[in-house]
Amino acid sequence: MEKRETRRKDVAQKLLHMKGGTGETSYAKNSLVQQKAISLTKAMREEAITNLYSKKFPRVLSIADMGCSTGPNTFMVISEVIKSVENICREMKHESPEYQFFMNDLPDNDFNNIFKSLDNFKKKLSDEMEDVEIGPCFFFGVPGSFYGRVFPTKTLHFVHSSYSVHWLSRVPQGIENNKGNICEARTSPLKVRKAYYKQFQKDFSLFLKSRAEELIEGGRMVLILMGRRGEEQYNKDGCYIWELLALALNDMVSQGIINEEQIDTFNVPMYTPSPSEVRLEVLKEGSFTINCVEVSEVHWNVAHDHDDDDWNNNNANFDSKSESLIKCMRAVAEPLLITHFGEVVIEEIFRRYQAILADRMSKEKTEFVNVNISMTKKE
Image (tube, rainbow, N blue to C red; front, side, top):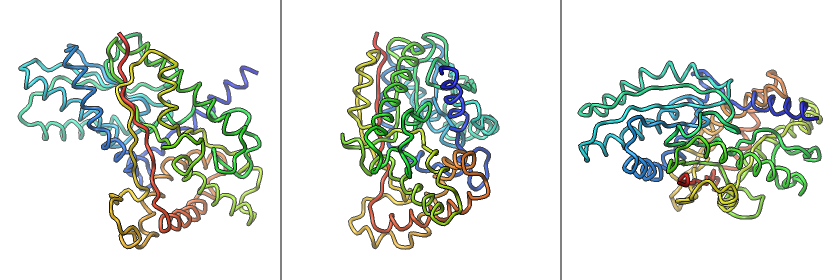
């Protein structure tokens, strides 16, 4: 039984990677939602890095990005860290440290694309900081699941993870009766919701325990998770966008394009926690002090700031506005869907899915909700 569960977990982790390469539907070109989520937490990261570096002044500063994926977002946090630290060094007339950046993700992640982009990143950073002599920077790819140890004991100063820890290590057990759904949905039985939450508790606790062993005392960690505002386990803040994908799939079942068993055996290994659920697991694990927990929103129409009063008038032509969102979702979901449903139906799935998204965006103020948390490893 234990070997079977290990195999299931290995299969799930093999499939959980964003679409690689640099094509029109790749994650590298379609991760604006994630970019906005990162930009909204800039102040949180600056506080963490400034506080850490001003107290420790390590000669070698070691930073890990857990679930780094690929594309420009991979270097966004790295650039911020360097600029923050170099500003401190300049103000205090302190020698710049050497930087170690560890980029972690599952083995099937497109690490090659990251390394091919390094020279362009270094040139851009050098141009932006032309009057500053930056300390030496070293970059490492670290394949492996972050639900377990990835680094040696007490070797990291700062850990960052964005849009990764809400992905579970596997599809939860005991959700066979989640028929017609592909996630924790409005019509999911209570047993299914409990199974998803239990898997999140297990995985997140293991993530915290592993990072606690790898961080130095006083080390900092900032996480961005897709989540929900309220305490009720289901609401539209959570997996609503995946429920709409299920509508497209069920429509295809009704027309005989895919069979019913295929959708009944397809479930997305993802849980969107509330702020209190995140807090609870951190307190239960016990290795970290919570500095702050915040909630942020990114509109599905990522090109829109969603602060206008006249919603409908400012969001005409939703077929066009849903294009960036469907590309973003495709970059995330396509590897999972191809493996389960086959490549032949992929274009039709996303054609129907985009029509549903455009309809909902025209009628509702649709947002991704993020739970952001900053922590310090206890000394």
